Image (cartoon, rainbow, N blue to C red):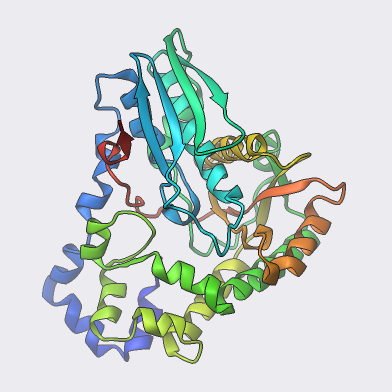
Length: 365
């Protein structure tokens, strides 16, 4: 979560944040949560081909950055991916559909990393229970060009440039997802995604779920490198000033809450195109497949110099979201299919690496 210098200074009246930054930007220069982003630098540094591939896989996108996986090694060539069921989003993802999509992202990125190292991966998907998939590695895999972009991939939660996505690039993305660039559809989706986000934000039990997962400031992020990281010099300046607190973000009458709405609306309205993934059925295998497809789409957008940001609030399956869920499916899947993912597409700035738990913390016996 980031905020522009202009907005931050306006919130604080200028003085406090500028004082916190200090001469020479000393405060700003110490706000990087280096421990939390260390797994990005460690990826590819393992002798065991399974661990080597998984060290890249765990960098994959996943809902609320829960990193809801456990990994058990089997024998000398296999591992089992399990759902850590203490990591769920029961308010906004009551059926774990989005959690399973995140599992698919990890599996696909692991497969790509294994292929780049010369290993093939055979996957067996489990339809029920905490075991998600069994993967068996064997020599002979081929490198996929998308693997070269794993370390540059981001989910860009920033306003996009006022620049259309060219038709030739949209055409290159068409094999990966449904690409929507028609101005009428884009306008409808801008409003839908904002209205759906407002439902999640103004419904106390769904907003509290996000607040409970916020890691505020460098110390918290390093201590628990999962959830929603809120850091950087500007935001930590707000925390020091007492403007940005968990209570303020839950209080719909607070300045922080109202400013958050303005910032998010500005971001959503700065969207020139959208992508959607749909499936004919809605099984765990479909969810895993959607995650694998989303990960490949994200890597392809990175390769093309584009940015991608999931905005799937309208696809969530809790009662307060039902009208927007129906609207999203009417727009994006009129044939009766299930919309698994919806995202913004455009030209965005490069953003920071997202915190991750070290691979060793995710291995179980």
